[in-house]
Image 1: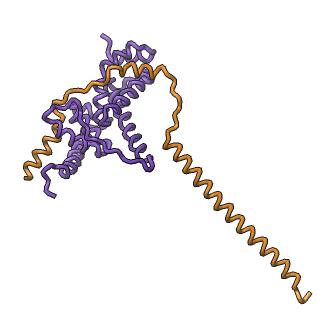
Image 2: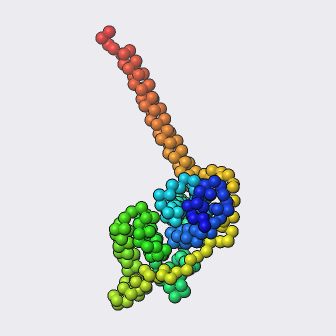
Image 3: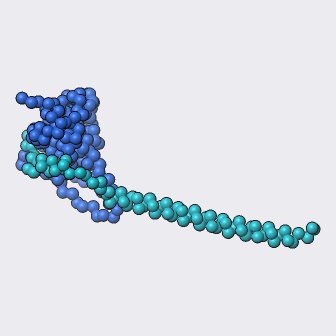
Length: 184
Length: 94
C-alpha cells in the first residue's frame, strides 16, 4: 500500500495517476476547510483548484518535516486567507461600485435543525482575526485534535488554547449583538 | 432572559457539530488538470490599471505645478534684471 509521502514523490515526477489518488484522498478536506473560510461554494472551489495546483507544482519540494496531511492543511489555510484578503482589496478598490448585499452563508453539510444557528456562527466567524479564525475553524468546525491544530499552525498547544479562548470571547461579544430576542 | 441568551449562544457555537462534509463539483479534478496543462497569461487586473492611472495623473499634476512655478519665477527674474539695467542708466553721480 502506497502512503501519501510516496504518492507525493510520484507526483513530483509528474505522475498524474498518483495526483488523482492524492486528490481523491484529500479533496473533501481541502474543499470543506476552504468553504469555512470563504463561505462561498464557487470561491471554495477556486481555492481547492489553487491548492491542488500548488501541490502538483511543489510536490518535489516536500521535505517530510510534517505529515502530508499537515502540509496540505497549511497550503489550504494560506491559500484561503490570501483569497479572503484579495476579495477585501478588490472590494476596497472598486471605486464607486455599489456594494452587493451578500446573503448569509448556508453550509451545505449542516444538519437541518441547526442551519439558522450555523448561519449566525459563520457570520460571526468572518470578523475574527486570522489566527483566531484558523484555530476556531480547525478545532470546532473541522473538529481536529488540539495537537494536530498546533502542528498545522506551527505553534504550541498552549498557544492554540489561548487563541481558542480569545476566539470564543470575541464570538460571544459579537453574538450578544445578534441575539434575536435582544432588547434594544 | 440572560439564561436563554446564554443557551442560544452555546447552541450557535456548537451548531457545526455533526456536520456532514460538502462535496466539490464532479469535474473539478479535470479543471485542475486543464489548468496545469495550459500556460498562464499574466492578467493585469482593472484595479491595478486604475492605481497606475491615478499615480500618472498625480505626477502630471505635480509637473504642471512645478513648471508653472518655474515659469513664474523666470518672469520675476527677467523683470528684476530689466529693472537693474534701467536703474544703472539713471545713476546721477557717474
